[in-house]
Image: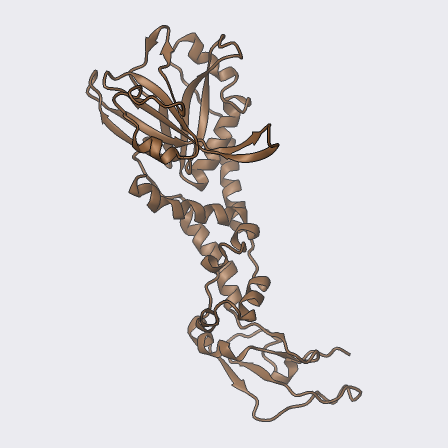
Length: 364
């Protein structure tokens, strides 16, 4: 696996989570990534209930998804311009079906626009499919997401001196239904598209539990040298002649190529939206229920982080005395106020600009 894939993977996962919204951002596996713990919460070893409260009360308004969909909608209004040039009739007929999703090239264009806008990377492979008898071959375009394009390299071609794709590694793993056990199982599968020592194009699939070992022992120049039942190699032909190039390309943000790595175009927007709407709002001082149902208080340990996190001046002070309930409810017994918040913001909401005792909730 190339280092660039490892570098780009966190960016793809970040925009993917921002696009999916609250379910992804607030998942237990990723919560601490988008909502870091306070020092006191980290020292408690995960037993501090305040962090769970902040996670529960966090709000994420998914404006990022709305912006992406709006951009894709604008691009979808522009009709696709497909040029085949002097290509064979069999290739031009691809406009009738286009891809394995059976929605022609219009559907392919919609998914391509979405992937380029969100992730900035999408792979297209020109393949040949047949019927159940292996007859009536037809060209078809198969699509690969940025997560499936694992690695690849280019080299100078021996027949025209141009730099072309030398090999590409694709991940086609997906759940497979076992008709004997009646359960879904992990179907590990890698696909290698490459050129052998004679510049002939081939397609090889690696299947089984240990595909990594098969990949490490695979010979690019002679794919048929290593005989293994989990390795299947095919040399596609067009009109009886093997191809001398790999019919695969990667569509990046504004250029083509397996080695043209580019960050997601709206990555900064995703980071800003998650920070501004989710993280910063939750870092705002939280008023939580006290052990007494008639009182609210702010957890005292937030005092060590409140001042550093906000541009306004917010201080936390403990009551030296034990103030009682306001006199407008004489029927309720006096209950001490554990802690209170005094905010000195320049422009404070009307509810917070009052005295601390006004923050008390009246169940009556």
